[in-house]
Amino acid sequence: MPYSTTQSYITFPTGHDDLVHDVAYDYYGRRMATVSSDQRLKVFDLSDDGDWVLSESIRAHEASITRVIWGPPEHGQIIATCSHDRMVRIWEEQEMGSTLRWKRQFQMTSEKRTAIYDISFPPATASTASGTSTGLKIAFISTDGIIHIYECREPQDLTHWIAVDIISTLGTLTVPPTKETEVSFCIDFCPSRWSGEQLVVGAMDKVQVYRVGRDTAKLRPVEELKGHKGLVRDVSWAAGMGRSYHLIATGCKDGHVRIFKLTAASGHLSPPKSKYSANSSNPRRQQRMGNLGAGLTGADETPPPNGDDETNNNNNDLGEGWLVERIADFDDHHSDVWRVSWNATGTVLSSAGDDGTIRLWKAAFSGEFQCLSVIASQRSGYTLTEVF
Image (cartoon, rainbow, N blue to C red):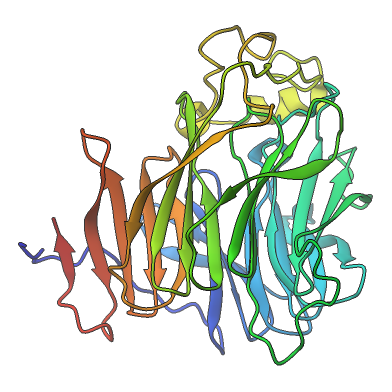
């Protein structure tokens, strides 16, 4: 296998005083948020010279911050963070005098006030079985395996959120894991704007898909993604890009990266039309959509192939009985896999493990996923970057 002679990444000092736990890019890839055990949230902007410039540093929590995510771009500059201090906090960039500053707009916590492990926003135009928009929602999962879902029904005012659902992922296990037990919980909403509200959940060593059905507005478990032999560290749902199926990736303590293909069975009905569709008269949404650039905005704007926009009611994936197939299973990391993430188009998967490498995976013309490259840290033992 040939080796690249040039370094394919750059490093820069974040200024954090402790371990960095998560990094997130905004929708356009020109802003970056980082969080750390030093309890700080930092935001960097990409300059015209290609340098990442610190624009904000906030003490955002009272304990280690585990996750940071950007909100849907239609609703402006929004960041959510979660922490071992049992809080999820919503931040919005606002004009303060002559400068832009990040302000905490809301905070929420789990019912039993346990540490928060993961958070996820659904896409802004996801619709429920009743035909109403999900508005701006956020889901978070805590160490007791409980998922809480909150909704901001007036996204122009991020100071008002209400709890709309509580889901137990541990099923009949009435006693949550003890403090001495190693746990792992992770969630990720389906990023497709046209597939209804769906959520993939990793709870300990089990992964399930939750979906809103025809007869209820509540998420409920449907398919299970089987084959994990350890704690599931991360899950990632790929953007659809007009495909007739979905791809979900998982990273596991057993050292494996797995990719699952979900194909809808026949007889499913299309997602109901949302009042916040692309042609909606909602002024807030029109204003936000008008601010979107032409680059990545088309990444998942293509409506289902058998209808026009969200009005087709003859072929969808809101029903039961999806066919689940494990199409890839890699153990190249030979150690815990902590992160998996798809690119904006859902065509390249990245995974990061305890071996100190980031591996990129992409499907060949045959449909079989293969390792595209390995990005190695200086401590990993690899020589710069392998490119296959």
